[in-house]
Length: 318
Image (tube, rainbow, N blue to C red; front, side, top):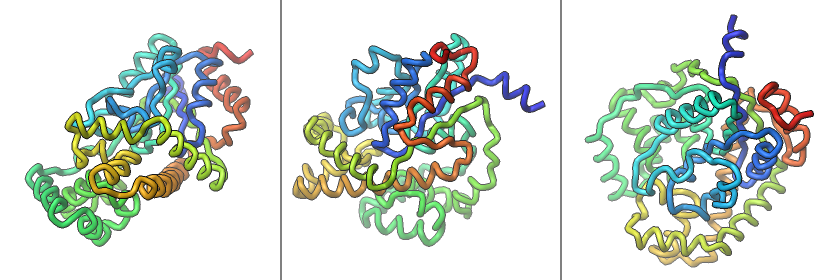
């Protein structure tokens, strides 16, 4: 019974993997060979004016193939996985009606999970608690809040970066409102909201190879003008405490521009933190048993698999 129901669901190709692994090149090849349009699943590419540090597709890329859910909001606007899921699902359904394959690409595990499995609903919230926690963070620093999270919810603390104040405060807010760790509430939710039939393609490289690519990418971003991009954002009034400005690369340039950290040290720390982020991404993706893993060099195998999966939609597989 469920097999027939699955056949009626829109088919979606999802390309995922850590930062700098080579997703962009693969997706470019997939759209050439199979047609279709790209749906962004990177939580920082949704922000306007943040192009270099997010490795956003260029305007030339976007002129060649439609990219959805890029440049959605300004850096000071609120945006979360729930809103993302709603918009992404609308785009995928619209493409399915036009018989166009949707190719979802990104490294934000929560966004990908939101599309394919839904989010757990109804975590309690209280704006007053949130404001108080934000004030605490400003007074005492984020480290103290992170240490508190480690004590009350070590599972979530392990998943969250110590500088990700937004998620630390959210987890503490849920704890204060419900008396339960957010991780316990999430594990009680069965994530059976599955509106699509996905083919999940994961890209991975040996760690030394990936780390070398990360270091090279950081150097390229600096050469392209990451520092100037962040200086421009600050001069437009986008403050360093915004969620968007806490992203990789942006907070590191802020450290140099506002706190006087030497630029060489800021770049070194950016490379280190990006490597750590890639490691956390792989930990997240490894938990998903639906992912078919490939090295990016196996491009032909991936295109063949995707072509077979799409069946009648595929225009490139002879």
